[in-house]
Amino acid sequence: MAAVKELIRTENDGTISFGDYELSEKQKLEDFENNGNLYKVKTYSELTKLERDGLFVYESEPGTAVTGFKAKKDGVEFTVSGKDDAQITVGLMEDTEYNVSVNGREIGKMKTNLGGKLSFSVELSGEYGVFVKVTL
Image 1 (cartoon, rainbow, N blue to C red):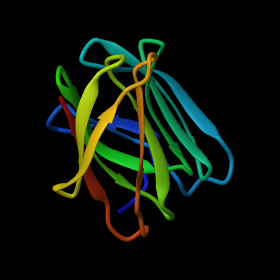
Image 2: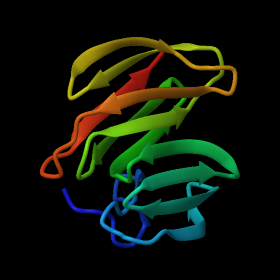
Image 3: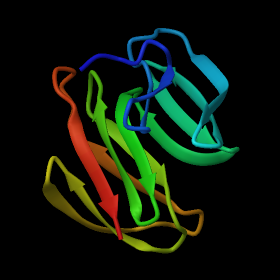
Image 4: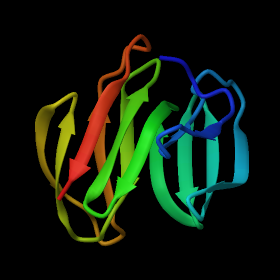
């Protein structure tokens, strides 16, 4: 799955795609508008981070490419790819339990911390993306 060379873009279905794990040096893009929100992305081989209206949304270590990112009232869903396995953190409602699935396989219920962050790992090979769904 290819990195997002524009750093961030809006897809035809209104979702966003972001991140370029192939960059050797950090790049960022601010004030990207999508559905009335302003996004900021920072990305390179070691880290990919997304903020919406100044609030934390997504972070991965090492860097990843995310396509079809959709934030909903009950969670988020997206496809993620990268060269190596990644630790992903998403921003959700604080102190809330969510179901997390990767490629349709439930990996369990997880609870966000008081800051609303939920962290999990995904196995990535660089060749194919994995679909992640986090729901109440």
